[in-house]
Image (cartoon, rainbow, N blue to C red):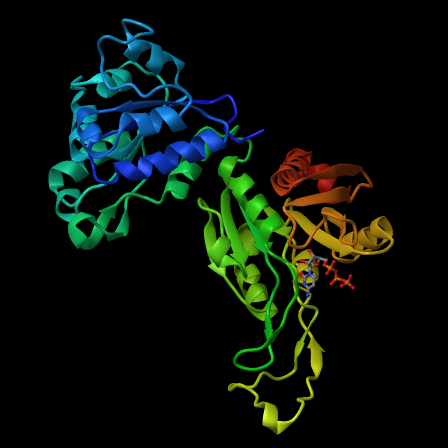
Length: 406
Ligand code: CTP
């Protein structure tokens, strides 16, 4: 089941060059399970074809308030059914019309006929974006509770570079998911680590492991979708999900430093990273040359980040570790849970097919400090993320006094 399953989104497309990117946003929302009803303004139709949206969305694109084959009043039907009205891209014109309530077309009539949240994704040239009128209109919209996905800097139409480019489709899809999330982690501070650390031997070589970061990224993405403020410390920043604050790191020492900074404020910490246990004692600044002979690499232990977080765990924080095992799964994982002062450990037998490193799927046993156990059969890493966060939320909401006695 997608994270937007059963949710209805009216996708209003207005006449900016970025209208072509709304096609990708539409596809992402449909992929996530949303029912998407597109409305294109006259301006949008100058930029993209209604047929494209009709083919990709959940129903044919609408372009007019009149002569609708389904109903004489499409704006009230769409407005009443919507869980969210998303306007992407939003031109200066539509932003101004929303402020004044000027019902100029089907999209504006729908905006006026809905009680659902409205989200606008402005996109325009820098000069237009910086106009006092546009900024003032947006301030009014924001004060009224309209959700705004701000534009980014980058290449604009005509080859100019500046601020005003539509936010990336994945950022917009993440904002929609967040707005429509069940919200059981709203404003909760969550720290997730992900990926395998790389411990340098010289300027180009390192000691590493096969971790892809996928499980940690799925947890970060799921937590953000449920409303949490997420910090993701990852060695795979290139593949990080949208909607989270990313702290890129490479080595165990860098990850330890980032965690020392971020963990004290976090209510949930999920240590999904595969941290190297050993690193080369010395890393050469230059590339070691073959003709100098086979190098002797002496390994020394790295810091155990999770054990350190366990020692300094603030009251009420839920600290979660992972255990990648090939033998005696439950015994080994339970020992780590106790030794590192954890509330919960997610144990996976990485010798099984389809489990752990590099796979899209995982099978885990979640072990709680109170001895409770929960088996999650082979499933998508997003489903594992859901199960881990369900258990974390339950732990967070359990009686704090009881937690202190444990
Ligand atoms: N971990 C850590 N710092 C390390 C090593 C591990 O924070 N230097 C964390 C991992 O992120 C994971 C948990 O500790 O959440 C368990 O990691 P794992 O590699 O399974 O166990 P180790 O404690 O390293 O023990 P071993 O390798 O002997 O199984």
